[in-house]
Length: 302
View 1 (spheres, rainbow, N blue to C red):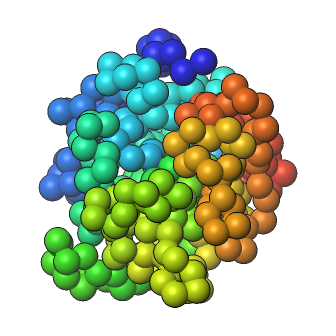
View 2: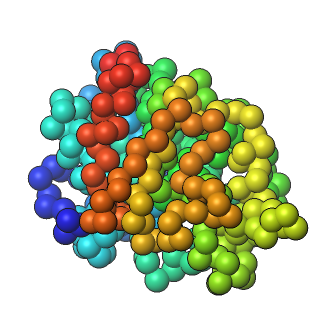
View 3: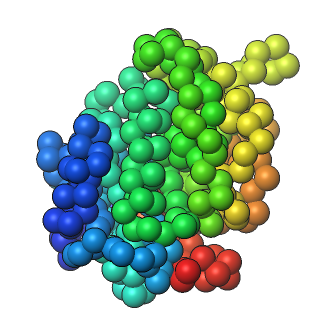
């Protein structure tokens, strides 16, 4: 488990999708030539009508790589395992999309937070996939910090980043474009590790980090509180995933007595209770469960 993924599928964007991005989203640099296995997806020729399958967009976690092959570390393989699984179920490259946000450097993980740059980057990627595929819907599968980033990307609205441009607006909610939202191992109530490290590290920050608060006196970070107070839903059907032996989230996934992996108004929960499945194992092995849910929700074909 969690060994470097062998290149059984061809990573990178298709030539056509890259050409589309160069023409319409060039400044974002979604194809990440600086990152090995930094992206995936796209058709061989430009779609002229909506695809038969509802596309899936994958949003990875802190310092991970979109479809890593193990070059950056045995755990930094992104959604390679899930993409391999979905390909085995009849999906094609034109149905599956991922890009790398961040620098893919685990040494700088504590510096990453829900920044204006990361949120606008992922928002633009979702919009690019919707425009390129001509699909009215997508499914979004996210992991770890990708969960809370993706939630805000979909909910849209106002945000604040003192290290960015200050106050900014992500735009209208994308809820109507998301059939199924999956959040695996997200720290929606904050991270218990931030109790000890304090709020000085950006990842644990009280504004846009994972600060879990000190109830009833101090609430979670502004970002996490606003996520739950924003009434826009993450999608038509909301799924969360939890590994009971998550070595990254720790604390039995509990923050002040609540499962941090759960999302307000979620519809279903995937739980791995085996001690052999942790934070990254959940990411790698949840494909079959997610596929079953997509099938039950009528979210595989248009």
